[in-house]
Length: 611
Ligand code: M6R
Image 1 (cartoon, protein in one colour):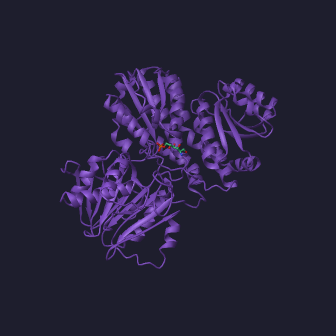
Image 2: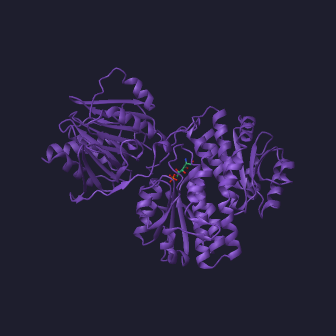
Image 3: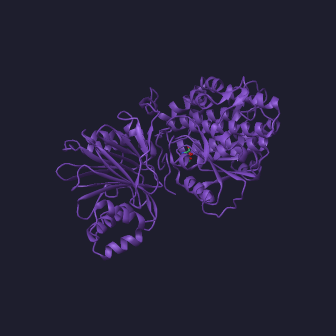
């Protein structure tokens, strides 16, 4: 959600900024803009894609050694040229880009209007920028001080980059609640919402913390807190190559990421799970094992797909560890004054590690003394950094808006974590523990095997492409997978879809069943098998169309269903990691036949950094 790029140094800034913005396109946006300094401030901005801006600036003088660029996801004001960032101040000397929301902007705007300021956009960003300029002019302080004073007065979230015509080598940056990474080069600095815009230039980065302000010049990086005290920048070495954020021969990032799962799951298991030795090594879990073993309750907070991973974990942790688990939407949890007792553990699950609702939810829980565990994919992200412990999913950068490989990574990490706690607690038999370790170790090979039949789902997608609605049903460990299948189909194909526990269907959704309604059953071989067979029969009796995800060797469901996709047999506790993959492919192929831009579906952002 909104992408931010900046550069100051000896190179041409425009190509670095534009390429960086393209790398951040996955975050979701509706307009683009850049500001350069070349004998004065030059601002170019356009509603639409980065490519539209590039076309728009053809033939213009883009020479500049400093630049800031932005992809905007509209919050205040419709997507339009005039609401696109960068915004310029009343004097025309300052330009600023902003990711986040200034909650008290209306009050500040009123004050500025009374002072005679005019606004050319509907954005909160233009208000903040003029507020800074106003402080700068009237308080006789320099720009850095003015930024600090302004930021102390505003409420909300922000990551800002600001340039000044009168100081043509400096970018002032600050963050609270929205990510900011600074790449340290030789005599140059790069800024980004994540590290992808700077990957080919430097591997040394500084993750800026909330309430920090950076003064960035080609050969100088000064970091301060809002109290004007210097903070030592903590330089981290990036463990990421450019290839990881490119399509590698696939038509779309989403397809590439689905097909990467055998190796991302292996990466997630690597160095942690040793099925022969019967061990799971997870240092973040080990460090807090006493708190986890004796937890009175585990509360999982997350959004979207990550919330579905939390639901699967609820079933697994309660089964193996006998610890009560609650799974909460972070957006509800943060506002509803939840009861958090001593002995409760909070697990935050997030691909991006920047989801605003999840971040604030755990900040609030932390204030109440809870121990926070982060299950996060993006290394160095905000959630990872504020957690007391946790584990990375190691799925690598996920660019497609749909979460696919990060989801299977979350399932693997949460399952390993449950197994480790159960083993330490003694709530699992040795035999079951060993069996499940082997089952987990076998998952990458089984995912690779089912991916070989991906074309079968292409045919199914073609057959049902004109459906206006779909139902996804599952029981037990596969119930959250039904929810996830419905979410994937909605976001990637724009077909309205609902997920339900299969038995719940009789309590309402069955009214929707007609000859044209596809009903997807996630029905791998497990202890609920006979029950789900009855549910399939109930749909068939009403002439609904059944698409079933079943285990190889199932002799019953293929005889009932209209279309079947087979996955390798697996223990029911591990089966969700397999059964979700055909649903990812089904939504991908549905999106493709329906002409959707699957990597960037409408209205969606990869990283939801506003509430
Ligand atoms: O980065 P997070 O895992 O915290 O993101 C949470 C949701 O925004 C995300 O899972 C969203 O639902 C995806 N588009 C699902 O594919």
